[in-house]
Length: 209
Ligand code: MN
Figure 1 (cartoon, rainbow, N blue to C red):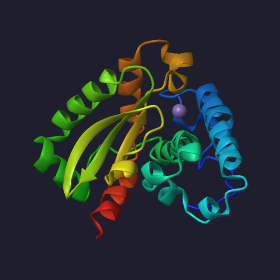
Figure 2 (cartoon, helix red, strand yellow; figure 1 turned 90 degrees about the horizontal axis):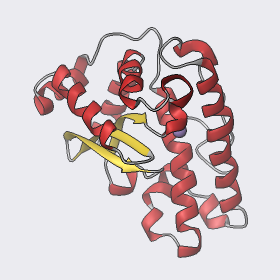
Figure 3 (cartoon, rainbow, N blue to C red; figure 1 turned 90 degrees about the vertical axis):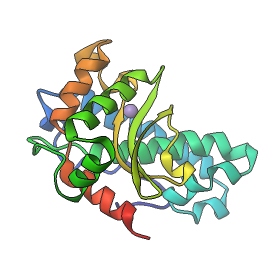
Figure 4 (cartoon, rainbow, N blue to C red; figure 1 turned 60 degrees about the horizontal axis):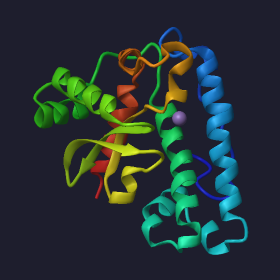
């Protein structure tokens, strides 16, 4: 991913806003990227203004160091570095049409750790539905095993030393215009546009020592 350092810019999506239709609508994609993600980018730059030591850290390093940062910037970094990283990660995992998955090495690991692709999907959906308020459900690698975790707001599994593989944004702004308050319907539609290829790349990167 490019632009890993301050000053951060809101890179364009790698596909048109309407690319995920009819599963995720064009207006949602546009507002999500151009307004919500843009705000995190702007706020992150603002938090890092006048902080040359923090400016030298990459986006991932900022998140990993989050708990050790001075209190004056800790929340600002967690919310906004997380907001930038998590959204980039989410958008990059969308593809339409998407292949049936999971396949390949990630498919094998999902079978090993969840029993089957179907059981994984059920558990992932249940986890995503269980997020109270705003947050994300994540598939992560934790010490070589796959695990489903949920995180509130813009917290990120990198903070806890886990490698992210797949995520779904369940903030209402990710689905409200099309799916209203029916998060389950959004999740079913989101599963139609998961880039399993990208998820496998994330998985293989996470397996590296
Ligand atoms: Mn979002």
